Every structure is written in C-alpha cells, then in structure tokens.
Length: 300
Picture 1 (cartoon, rainbow, N blue to C red):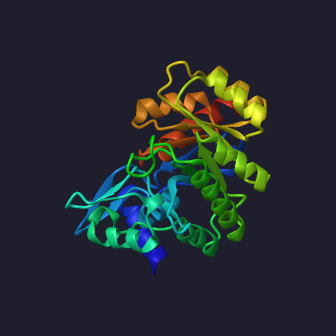
Picture 2 (cartoon, rainbow, N blue to C red):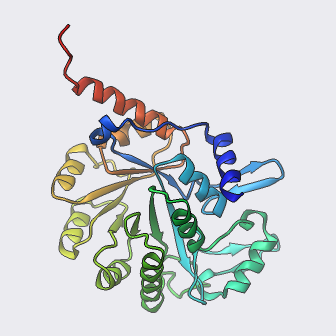
Picture 3 (tube, rainbow, N blue to C red):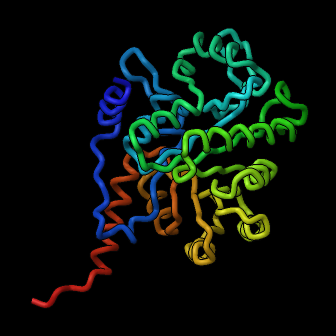
C-alpha cells in the first residue's frame, strides 16, 4: 500500500520517467540523485505536506531518480534519523536538537509540526529498498554542524561522530546495503572510522572548494571519491576527468534549472544531486545526443 501510494505521488509530481537504453549504458553518466530525497523544502499536496528527507519524499525520489541523497543525524538513543537542519523547531519556538534527544522526544516533536509529520529513521528506507529489490543508489550525507544548543562550538564532538559512524556501518551491513550506498561528509573522523570498520562502504569527502587539497586528502586517506560543490567557479571538466581517470568517483551538488544542469552534465561527474524534477529527462536527452554523435553511421 505504501509503495503504491508513493508511486502515485511520484507520477503526480514528476511525471513518468524513462529508462536509459542498455546500448547507451557506457554513456549514461552522470546518474541523477534526488537532493534530500526528492528536492529541498516542502511540497503541499492537498491537505498534506511532503517535506525534504521525509519518508515519502525519499520514496518518491527512489521512484523518479536514479538514486537519492539524504541527510542523517543520530539521536541520543543511537537511532539514525533523516534530517538536515541544526534544530527542530515547533510553532511555539521550542527547539530540539536530535543528537541530544531521545527517539520519544523526537517523535513527540514530529507529531506537533506539519513539516516533520513524516520524519523517519534511515532504517525505514533501507527496509523499503531491500523489500522491493531496488537498485538505486543512496548517498548518505552525515551532518556534524549544529547549533550551540547541541554542541559547544557547533561542531559535533568526536564521541558523537565515531558513534554515528559505528551505527551507520552496522545498519548498512544489517540490511546488506553495501552495493547501494555511499557516505559523504566533510568530517574526516567519520570517514576514517567507517574505513577502519569496513572496506566495502564507499566514502566520499565533501568539499565546498579547494579541489586540489580535497583531491590530495582522498588520495592520502584512501577514500573512494569527492562530493563537491557545483558553485566552485574553478571546477572544470578537465579536473573531473583527471580524478575519474585516477580511479575515484565524483558527486556534484546542487545544480538546478536547465542551464546549470547542462553545465554540471558537461563536467561528466559520476553523480549529480539536484532538486530539479526535470533533470532525469534533460540529462537523458543530452546523453542521447552524445550517443548519436559517437555512433558510426551505417553506410546505405
């Protein structure tokens, strides 16, 4: 029932999506990931709101895109929740910090705020992915920057980061999600911990700029790739190509709109994170055009 409901929602919002012809598989990059599930913010649907990183938003993203990116935080009970912001805030300005709160408190807050109605733990998505035999990728963005109400200095402490890394590794292995997930964060303690616990979970260093420094870090640390900001004006196809030829993968975030998506596609990364529901169709059109140019004409 949940699956059917989500599929109807997905088709209503995004329209039917089309698959990439197998003959073009080698040219099908980049794969498109729905940013925060199926886009930032909330969509009003009748009397309901479907908000970023919520269960239905991620399900819709899995229905429409070639994968999704979700943000994760860990509660005081050790549960991994899909949520981006530094705090949860209700209509009376009461604040809740997920890392310092138990699951009961989080659910109570979610029950009072429309935008948090479908807030869900990460394992609900893993369960859905495994239950329906999905192949889409899930990029897990580990959040470590909060408000002073959560951590002095705003950056999460090492105990929290290492505990989150341990919980994430356990959850990924429990649901046999290793072939489908990537972990991205700018907190190297998390990536290093994951690498020490499992050599089969791909780790991506998240960077906002300084490409060469980021490239040096992934080389030294043995990470599998870069998750990089599209807004860096120094980002070029040549830089991306050099990194990919060296055996690493590249995610780019977050271009929206046809022009920005075309620029991101021209970089030829492995993944593009976007809020734009038309991205899959546009990128497939551009790949089709590239494929036709590279296909030798059959003599008449």
